[in-house]
Length: 221
Image 1: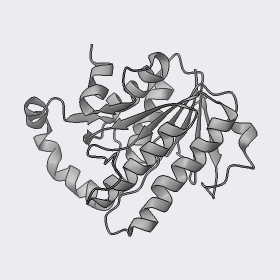
Image 2: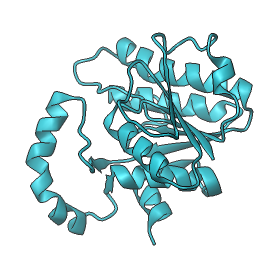
Image 3: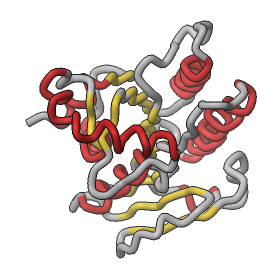
Image 4: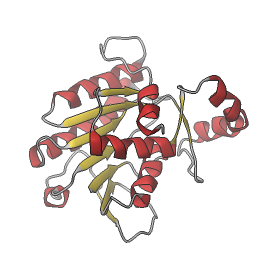
């Protein structure tokens, strides 16, 4: 299997990249982003792209893939809706529209979030924008799935790029064993998300929108 990973330098994307590189059935992983991942692996190729709204110069490099894992995102804290939408909706649709033209029917898995508002009319800004993005992706001629994880446990030395999130994790990590026992269907690890993406890319899933419980179910023995 050959896969594209967008946003591989973020917390979720880093975890997804790690699982892709560890999977013996994955022959090639190509990351797309503004900065290099720093990872070294014979299966890894990297495309550095300054403008994530314009893929006209690299379309030939996006051909021949089986799946795309779109993990690129930004924290909404302190952002105006227009700026957040420019990144969240704009970047995702630019990439997905290009891929739908190159690979009609290609599997694309988009990392959204628990609480995403599919109506696009709710009071929470990030949830509206994520809902608008999901709906637009699902309308494209792609085999698209939306992943809506809730609390994500970073593993294997992975950290969030957002300082406030890193502080939160530092406080919350000692409580994770208790939280996992109390809320087994609300917490996922970066490993689980990466493994679930690979499983869905191979076998599909009965629903297009996967909540935390669904993502855990995909990888549960």
